[in-house]
Length: 371
Ligand SMILES: Cc1cc2nc3c(=O)[nH]c(=O)nc-3n(C[C@H](O)[C@H](O)[C@H](O)COP(=O)(O)OP(=O)(O)OC[C@H]3O[C@@H](n4cnc5c(N)ncnc54)[C@H](O)[C@@H]3O)c2cc1C
Image (cartoon, rainbow, N blue to C red):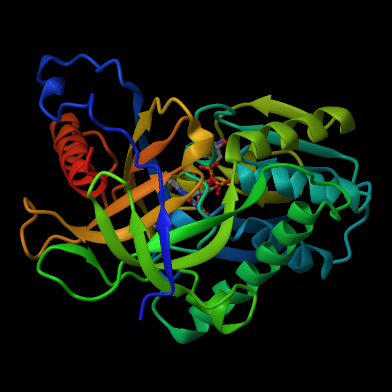
């Protein structure tokens, strides 16, 4: 039985020709193509405290496609490992990394009274945290056991309830960037069309943090309809959140230095938070960390407010090979995002392969939205 029938404005792809890239120029209807690298780690993220000589290293990296969804919980867990050591509040502390993990770590430390803080990062702009699409759902990680999943659920639930407080306006520090959103995901196992999809939200529904999904039909008003499950979650407007974090750091005068760190021994302070994302492969000699490629199309949809929904579904288009596991992935960030790929062990350096993905994304989305 279908419980809803909802009209949605389709993403307008009518001006996007999948073959227009052959000349190497970007079509007018696109703002850009983004190549993002998720910092995946076999066995899940490394959140641990380790003593190495004189130094205390607190690692917090390797969150794959879920770093934003696990952000507050991961940082608070890392802080609890640190505070177990009872260090003086005046101790110098270096935070390596200016992504969501590094910035949040610095702010939480400051709020707990640590004042001798410095963020050191190779880059402050254009990093993975700025490329996230903003879907609250812990996805695209390499987890191998129920124990790891239980840990991810724990830090995810902490993050989710923090976002709840932000959205309701009751968080003491953070105020922006979190809004409720409907997510449409496929059902069933068809030879063509939407397919059964794990959304990453299932543990949140089971815990009662999110309502049960409903089954119904979405209708784009152009003859294109899909039977889908409708979940609710949060959309994280990550550029707005990064801007708020930066402004809070500025207000507190937290020092920032642009520098590549090759070895922890280059850092003078004895307490180091390692939030280096994919950089931890070299910095912490961690061979478990690997890239997972997310190719994104940055759209120029004229009225993005009409598109405040997420589509996250496995999808088999008329052109897909039966074994392909492709996604329709629309996010209302900026003026709309289409993507994304989830390709493990791929750093996005093969331009021809990236363009193949772009072409596939356009073809499949045209079929899905009927535009
Ligand atoms: C296309 C795409 C879509 C995504 N969508 C979502 C989503 O919808 N929801 C979600 O929850 N997550 C999503 N993610 C994942 C999320 O963005 C990441 O998990 C998260 O941003 C990782 O944050 P981080 O702070 O650990 O790392 P980063 O943001 O990569 O920051 C690492 C920092 O460390 C610095 N650094 C690295 N090595 C060194 C070194 N040797 N010396 C000095 N500095 C160093 C870097 O310069 C950088 O400042 C997505 C990711 C991508 C690529």
